Image 1 (cartoon, protein in one colour):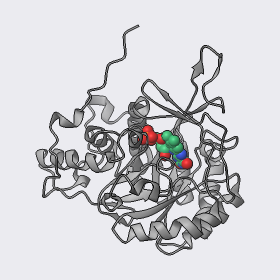
Image 2 (image 1 turned 90 degrees about the vertical axis):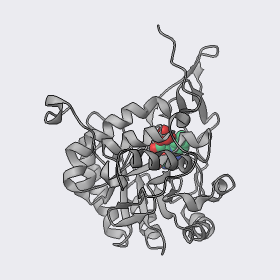
Image 3 (image 1 turned 180 degrees about the horizontal axis):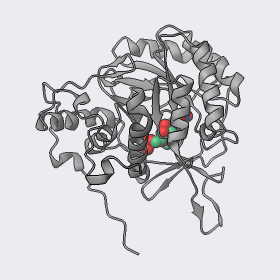
Image 4 (image 1 turned 180 degrees about the vertical axis):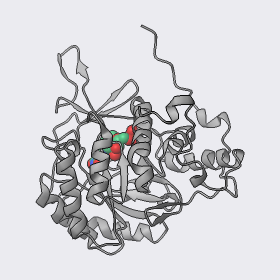
Length: 342
Ligand SMILES: Cc1cc2nc3c(=O)[nH]c(=O)nc-3n(C[C@H](O)[C@H](O)[C@H](O)COP(=O)(O)O)c2cc1C
């Protein structure tokens, strides 16, 4: 078997400048929600914001996405909850979080303070059943300054985490019920799971249920084994794979959903899955994404979302584009591929 290729230690040095080029407009619009740039954090990878503020100037982000909030406090799974794999990260955190009440009392005021500097607030919500989701989403969306709710229907690391994310009929029903309890100007983002046969079916269900925006993808169900103990390396057994290993898979799924559902429905996509360099960001934009979230790469360099913007600006300028919107979905497919489904 061939050896894995070593990553270029500094691909951003290829052609990216150290500072954004003036002129390229990085602002994006997510179903009416204006963001000063497309860069955001991926849920669960940097807490409730202020843990992350120590390392990065949050005002530079387009939006901050919180870790999943559940109605009840959750302590999560036993350790080990994270292990590194050759080209990514495997986690089974188990939705550990402070719970709805503490989030509203302690964390949201900090997020509000951050919002005054520019970034939008997106609160990720998870639950066990319909009542959990509607209760938590209704209360959070009722709070002033919460710009969007992201529904996590795709967590592979809790026993019933994927129930809604893999069943289109149940998903449509959930989304419709959550939409009803939300403030109308609060956007509803539905986060899709890659752990399905045909992701366009769940994407369609989310849109039909009333999703304003789709985000994709959550982690792939995966496992790593300690060959000495013959046990799974994660206490949970399986976990969710993220990082560079899943990026080409995510690019393909984003493009499939863009072509089959999102483009015609005029529903923007927030892409995530191994984004680490500005080139990765451009791939996702060409595939059809409008927003870009960074997760695993934050563990390598917390400034990743900010660093990506410099390369993105230069790329747009080199391509003669004034705005990010000029390249969204502009992947050119040769010959029959342009018209045939794949
Ligand atoms: C440690 C860790 C914790 C995560 N926790 C959550 C979570 O609480 N809610 C959620 O919707 N996604 C969660 N995710 C998934 C990420 O938000 C993202 O969808 C996924 O990791 C792919 O992006 P990435 O490759 O850039 O990490 C988590 C991912 C990681 C690595």
